[in-house]
Length: 107
Length: 125
Image (cartoon, one colour):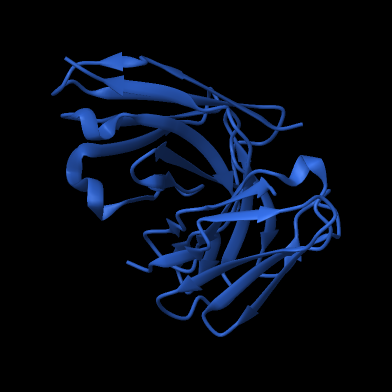
C-alpha cells in the first residue's frame, strides 16, 4: 500500500498570507495525486489533480506542484473561504490512499 | 449538474451488515467508476471499494471479504454491503464518482470529481 504523509497537521495563517501544504508519498506516483478541500459537514471537493492541474472552477490562487515523491499545495493569498481541511489522495494504484489532512486555521 | 444522493441505515448493532445505496442524478451512469469512501476520526479518509463501467470491482484489502459493491444500471444506482460490522466501522460513508484510467487491459483509479453528501453510520450495541 502506498502511504501518503501530510504535513503539517495544522497550519495557522492570517488572511491574505500564503499557505504551503506538503504531501510525501512512499513511492513514485507518476503525478497521480489530487488535493481536496473539506469544510465541516461537507464532502471533500477536488482542487487539483494530476499533481498540478486545477479542477474546473478552482481559483488560480490554488497551485499544485511536485518534486519526485514530494507534493505541494500552495494557496497564494488566503481568503476567508479557504480555511478548511485539505487532503492529498494518491490514485496511482490500488488501494488508493489519502493523507491524514492539514487543517488551515486562522492565525 | 451531477448529484449523488445516498441512503441506508444509520444505526447498526455489532455483527450486522451495513447496506448503503447511492443514486446518480443529472448525469450519465455508464462510462464512469463509482466508489465508496469512509471517514472516521481515528483513520481519516479510507477508500473502501470501486466498481468500474465494465462491472469489474476493486476493494480495499484492509476490509477483506466483508465488502461487496454492486450496481444497478437500470436505476443509476450502486450499493455497498459491509458484513460483520464492529464499532471500528463507525464512520461517515461517502459515495463518489471518478472517470477511472484504463491501461494495458486493466482499470486503475482516478481522482474523485463528484461526491455524495455523506451518511453517518454508527455501530453500537
